[in-house]
Length: 328
Image (cartoon, rainbow, N blue to C red; front, top):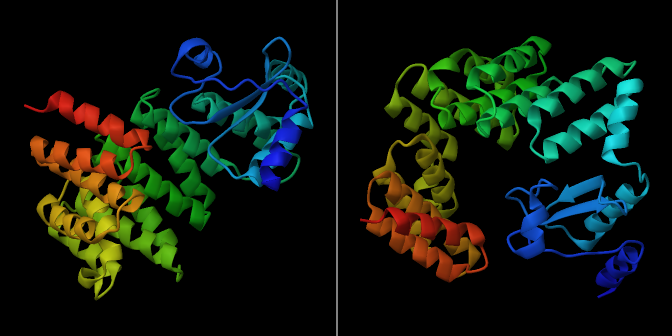
């Protein structure tokens, strides 16, 4: 293909070394280059192995070439960029370093660079949400306590950007579930509800409904009310629309509520789904729901089916291995 030929041609400008981060030399240097759990990772270095730039994820040829050419346009190493920024802070370099440190999961450092980029801009810029997001990611990875993300959330509310407040409330709710801190987020959910109340697009209405449901669940302790809000947001005919079963089941599973009904709908969608990745996605969710209900043997069976439907997806293989490890 022409696109593949373009990629091969571009790579002649570097020494291209493909490595498996889980084996041999790749495993040995994966920590040094902050490979983490997300693949693939592309790292551009100088001849001494010092990092110049990096990017992650499966992309098409056009996007890969765009990232590659952007990286090649400035061959300054990260260490040199950091040293130069310390001597003379600039908005552009601050944002570059913030994104780099976020990419290598040094989220608190990323937040600091966003802050310093904001101050050094010389014009009005707003990175309050990015700062909050960095702290939320750090708390998600258990690198900081949950409470340390709250001042950054407060700053988003004070900035009064409606979309940022809505996104902050949604992300904070997800984080609070993970860190078992849902009793702390009522004021932020209320702020998010107010900020998203005027949105008329489908995404905005869904977000507003989800925040209202979470407020009912976590602040008013009204589980039935929360479920009713979610169902209403799915539409009058949602019970006959197979496309709504997965999002409804996922919503219930994430909050560990209404799991019997969630299992029934996701099972029905799975039975009707065509073979392959789509069916595997439903089966994996079924396995999670069954695990949450304590039905481990059933969870293992669904996880095995998910692997059969999409054997190339490593997450399903890992899920099955984990479930087999706890199977009685």
